Length: 214
Image 1 (cartoon, rainbow, N blue to C red):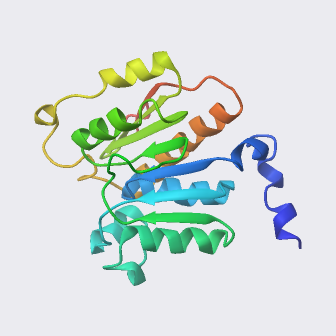
Image 2 (cartoon, rainbow, N blue to C red):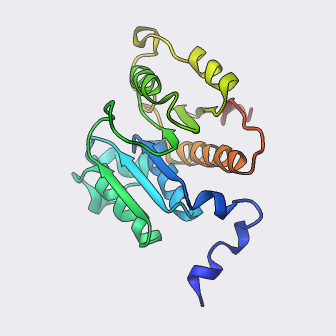
């Protein structure tokens, strides 16, 4: 079997590889949603990934974020880089074991998967005019929200979803989380990404309550 030629056959009509291959994709935050986003991007066929996170793997991350027992106490960036290269060892991975900091050169595609609204706001202020595709995944319990910004209208809408940290609910947005909700959120984020690559209108604001099925 020729893995290189056969691997992408079933997604060929849905994922334009000629548009995907030149892109550098940055994922900021490798928690519940971010970890799943990265694994799906690697399977999708992204060639260059930049992973940004300052945290180490803890026991709860095995249950809610899909890390392995062998990953415990390792930086999440290193553990996730190892996982994606097990999917595709030709994938280029830049590892940034740190918080996002202004001045860092990022890809034209940004997936933001951080816990706090203040972090989102700071990152957005820095990268708003530097990225072509922006997707923010938010989750609390079994409710998820996906925000995508690719043009002036969707960027203006995204501005309205940011608020002062003091107005946020107590606790990180992933303080109540499950691996299945994170996986669904990641899938919806990649769907917006593939729509954008196919020049199909993206949804600027998606909310889904799994418990209510709406």
